[in-house]
Length: 289
Ligand code: FE2
Image 1: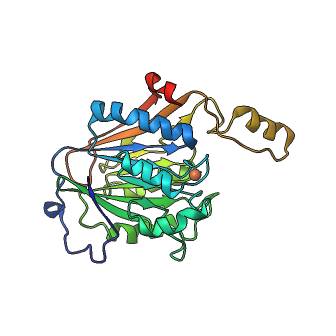
Image 2: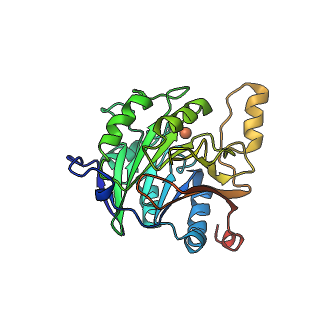
Image 3: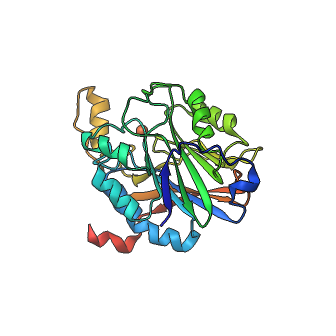
């Protein structure tokens, strides 16, 4: 298993590319927002297939919707980590479940957006290490239409300064507005390995490596039911929109897919390629629901 540490107290001792490591082939599988139990089971069933097919060095997953569609619990986070998810990123639903607050402080591998207030539980940066490769991960929240106490564009600087010895850095930009995510991609181009967008649950068709070498996609999509409305049972979402009255939302379990990107790298802090991975839940596994 990879070693993990929270934001190091003095991570600035190392500096240039020589000391970063990660010159060999490194690949990162980033899994889009896991929605509900159906999303969790889809990920767990898909991971063996993905490991055999892509042999990812690291796996990151956004888990902010894994607990019944809203938030995450310590038990569910532990289950994802035990299944081989190296780092869990979160977003606007981070604090939906109170029982996770202490866990967010104690578990270095789960990240809430780094630009939340420092008084809020948890942390937004971590490093995981495998085979001499140090992967830094940053969770960020957009500021347009989402609540985040500080600016993503200013707070990313201190986050990156904590990761000066990282071989690679992946930033999860959890945001509603496409413009804000595109801007963050350009802002960090040439400074990090990848900027991947999450939150909308709909994958975008703009995955590419930017001119400075940073892999980018506006939204990875979700790991959950395509038969609903961004995860919710479609009849409930439609009723809400038709009646303009409160409707209790439940997670759909129809047509579950895994949505992810595979980022491949051969130089520190740069990506060679970013490939979308969009696949239905493996059929043979469905019998165990
Ligand atoms: Fe979100």
